[in-house]
Length: 162
Length: 205
Image (cartoon, each protein chain N blue to C red):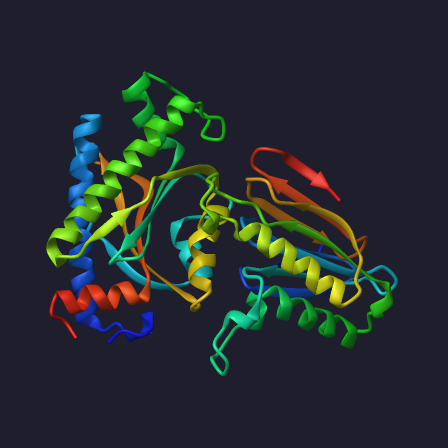
């Protein structure tokens, strides 16, 4: 029997080991980050909304799962406590679209999110082995921890396996 | 003084419901006269929702919608988001262009202009009503259009409000055409500062 998918909401992350999958639905300008250790089959999927936690006023309550610079290291730490080895961890990323086509730069948050995700991964020295980001459409991401496969589904472009 | 959406009390919510009622009545009258059909609106719902709940309130994340987004500026900031189902888009495009069985992911330029214009007129009527009621100057930016999964569309207001909190205030109404309820949403999504301004103009603390 296959395990049901773990569902990751907006500003959320979940980890899994071996058999099973993690899904996050309808990423728009948000970015989905799949981290995976191919030897231990430990993986995680994070759905971030914003680039930088430093935009929150110091001392104010904040959800660390919301930001690229806090969510990714936190999820990695969790994977390491489960037995993943950092030097083996690779990343696949998807999302960061600009949903409304306009020159108004307020709508460019998708690009900024993707850039922040890349920065966070560079700081952690995690290589990005596949990505499907930008453009102007929403994406649903399924991530399979048994083989590290990331399945990206969109309404207009069908399913892409990365 | 309202500093976050959680500060709203029952009186505030009643006032917002009434504002939503007046605004959306105006918007529906505009839509009704454009498409020549009887439009009813239900009493608007005013909700302070977590981001995930705000998406689920509108439907399943992967449900397809055509969306028109209008940014508000000047004394009230925020946005109006109109999300229409294939069903409602079809009614509108049938009236304008005699189209049947449309694919909302493959609309042509004429379809997109027609839907954007409907959104623009409804949005402006909504805003004019609030502006007159509260004596506030509210400007609207040009409407922008997309058709995609509703979760992906909702990521736009959610991200913008995510910078300052974890909740969205939605004043939402559903649309009924010729007595048939059509699952579509027209949402007014104001910023916290704009709400404070609105209440103070209306003489409410």
